[in-house]
View 1 (cartoon, rainbow, N blue to C red):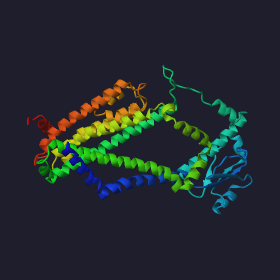
View 2 (view 1 turned 90 degrees about the vertical axis):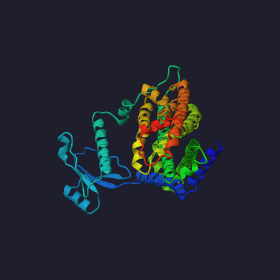
View 3 (view 1 turned 60 degrees about the vertical axis):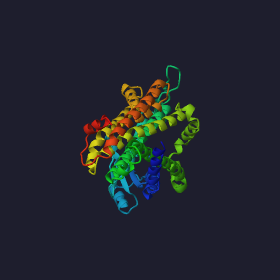
View 4 (view 1 turned 45 degrees about the vertical axis):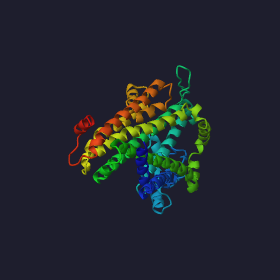
Length: 437
């Protein structure tokens, strides 16, 4: 055990002390934060502004089209098309719409917006929406129907869901469970790929450089493999925690760094402030109000995070010990390992919507799928959607799966780490695993 700890400590320190570790750990969140800030900036910043003249001689709009900060409509009923065209050429307006007096008797009017330059797709859609909303308003008035009456007729009913035990099954809880399950499963999916491949590359480097021949003279191959898995896993865990802390901290700093963004976003969401405040107050008691047991969720996330990493990293270490200098050999051997991870993310996309389906139950119990799929089911509630016995069975099967894969990887590692000049295959590695010492 001491040798495993020494190897794990060496793997951890040699990677943490590298400049590349600091750069990727710090710069990657900053890069994501920069993209995030740019997306927000361009989404809330003002787009193209259009000042459009409307010569409504047929009085179809009754001199009323609601505009906004970017699109403004000016009614000029007495101007001719030639005058409007001259106004656009002189930059007085960005465009115009001329509706002749006989259009009112021709049924549905055909409105043409004339501009000096081509209008972008987003601005075009906004202009069309404003005009169509004004036309709808005038049609309603024609049939003696007010906008408030139409809104009242279209008002949705108060439909609620509950379980047979009488527990409230709100849409907020279902949406929150969907988001939490999807994000948690996807994070584990990324970790399995990134840090599992890191373990494989670490084993390959020592084998190719012949350092492993010196190391195995002092420690057993199993101790060397476990030390590398635990050491690299600790690096990944530390890096992952730093990323989360930085991303959360930078998210809170966003309104401070870009104060004008906060002002613009508040003006855009002025109508939703009351609802958002209520949701914020409600979120203070998320454990009770949303039905999501966050302490259990965090514990399960850590368990499946570590369990999934240990299971797959042992298989990646197994592949790394078998391959030689040719990286194509590693790619061919990685397919049986990466396919279950890809299948797991596919099953998870179904499990977040249908957590009680037979496919979701199977995926949450099978050790190769459970680290990703089970998180999608846990978020919907243990005891209601997910029976407690299934959670316990899933954890038990994951531990058993880790022990089996570790045993298999250790047997392959013992032979493969010292095997050179022979192209490996899974059939050959299977022989190594069951060969007697």
